[in-house]
Length: 146
Image (cartoon, rainbow, N blue to C red; front, side, top):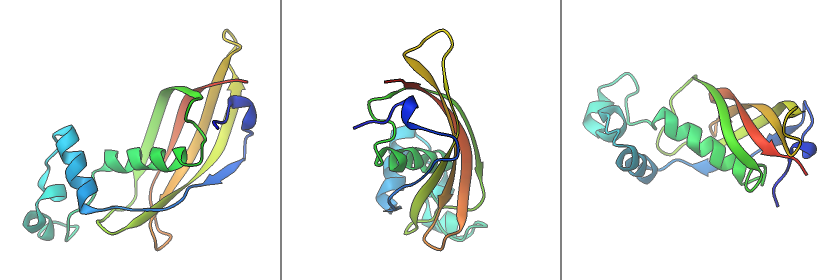
């Protein structure tokens, strides 16, 4: 059951379940997007890089963050559009990392011209299994009202 704008209040916090990043995730993302950058897909190249091994694509990590938040039934069936995204990457996400997201509501405001919807602004932090923040961001969605 989705949540609607009326179900969110500033300061409210949500923690997602965790998920382990696999080599298959990276290969599937590369195939889907055409991004075969060798730091993601070539073990020998990546071993000689600053990371020392293959790492997940940054945009893939953002997509997984939204997927993890969706597992909390926050958005499915109620969000109409992603309007804005601002994301910062603090550390690489590696094959075998188990990640989760903590998100906090910044603003939940009705749309002045459309009483059936509003704007939800949230900030999210993406953590690995060692509780290290690997990325963070803010996003705004258009969401239905009850």
